[in-house]
Length: 157
Image (cartoon, rainbow, N blue to C red; front, side, top):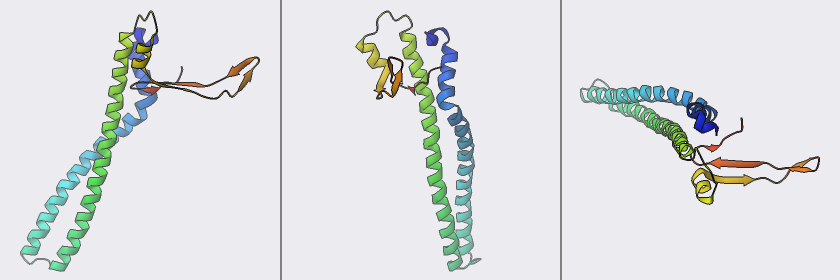
């Protein structure tokens, strides 16, 4: 089996197929998270300064209310964006972990002598058998998709 002989290459193949673009986007998202967290901290400082300026009479109450509403709106939008980014990053990391878990299952069955229901249940999440689409000579052509646990469908090489 390819996975037992070339575990690293197999894992890289799975990760490359399913996760390379997500991983690049995840790195961008992590940088954006850092930037957004700094902006949130800046908003807190600005609001405190704005409050102090109002208390000292440097700006009017109306101007304070207008600016405060704008900053709080931006702050809320930024927090929503941050939560979305964090969820995306966590999802990518979970998907990568699933690939490593799948490889653990593959190692377990390196020298498989017999395929039985227990093994199939451990390795395969579902099998989708499509309606046959045509004939090649006397043979019917039918698509079968196998969804493996932890990694989903793995396209043939």
